[in-house]
Image (cartoon, rainbow over all chains, first blue to last red; front, side, top):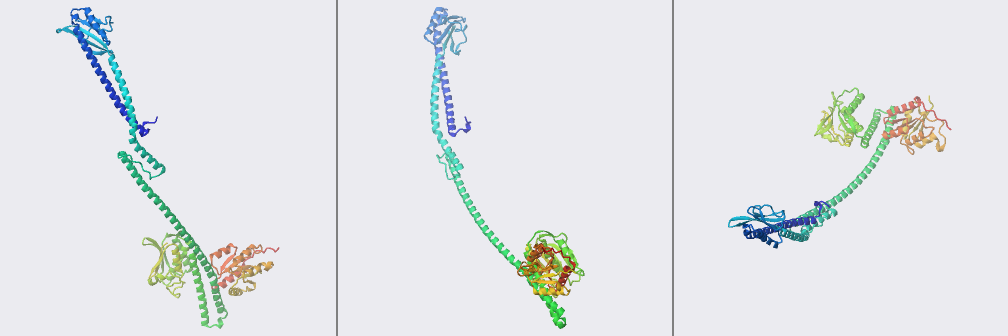
Length: 491
Length: 147
């Protein structure tokens, strides 16, 4: 049998109702039976007392004269009452004068009278009654009756009580079975609805309301909760659908974008390849005619010098200088193109060490110049070492070139903080430039000095800017005429 | 003196004239054979239409890269592929300064790579030094016997 708490509510309710009504009925029956017995015992006790007193009154003469025969006869009248078990008359001295029945055994008759009064003793009702006349006590009457009437009455009451109890319990069970539904039905309906919700995830079901009591209110609350859940569920599903749609849209967009990027990359690659081919042919084909111009000018100067006057020789020298200058231009342009095309390989670069190498190279190439260099130690940056070397080389060479006319040339390489960003600085105290033209510094073929003042092609700083830009950095310059120039760049 | 010749593979007549002039000033012109494109160069080395080449291989090949018909790198490849010319000294003499050409040239087995200077004085120097070095200083590898 399952424990009480696992019983279905129906059975619990029925059991509780039966328990309560059963208890009430048992208590009531017990009270009824007890009352019956007590009342009946009082009645027979009073009957016995009355009879005893009548008998005692009749026995006065027999006792007064100690007439045993009379006394025996008087007592013999008791034979008409079947309940009488025994009786005895004691004289003043407490000696037995007569007994009933006549041959009564000693266990039926007490040897001596006891104090007056009535009481139940060993399943019998016994009583001692004084026999007196005119205030003078003559003796005592003992009388004993069985209690068969009492036990009969008790048995009857018990039977009645049991029958009533049985009928009442049956009626109670029938009523309980009929009435428990009022309470259990709404609870069962709630339970079924809850099961349906949890197993089928169907939030549209509602529990039937069967009354306006607490259970009705509970059903209402439950149904309202279901309405809220249903709303929220619908909302959630809507969001999920929307989200799915948005994800699909975004995915589509991204795919399109990816496709566009891929197309662009392919176009760029093609353009790069074209540029490559162009640069290659420039490198190869543009130089060949220059070589001829220079070469044959030289041949003229060598073989026909005698036939030429000074102006003719001078012109040919100019032709040669121009062709060589153009060769340098072509080489510089190729370098610039190479900077643009070169693949970037990013690593940590020791800029200070790089600057020291470049300076050593410059000093080796022009040992007659004495320039004071200040290179801050430990400057590092992430970038392509080859490209950064080209950039730094151009900047330092620039400083080297434009301090040529300065009696105490100084060039510095350091780092500084510009608006919270680290910038590298290349500073010289050379020819400088007019800030008016600062924006032209980094343009291809843009020069702020004539070739006569300072030689150059105007490609170097353009190359530097392209390298810095490829690193995602910026470059700018400050300066004043004859007060030096300062180049700042970030990486 | 080594009896070897220089095979100059060059399509530009100006460059041929200037090279010849540079070599002439050092009396080396008699030792120069000129091929004006890749096909001519290969014909000279291996003989036209499957014929035999010269009895003696040149001491050095001065090879331009940009040539009509068969370009310089292809010529180099053919030279290195043939058992007889496998060890023939080849100097690339070109206008190109492209890293790609340098790498390809050396990868295919060039012995040297010289960029033609625009300046005629420098060019003359280069031609002279090449001639002197490969004709006089360098010992050419032995030529395998013809079968």
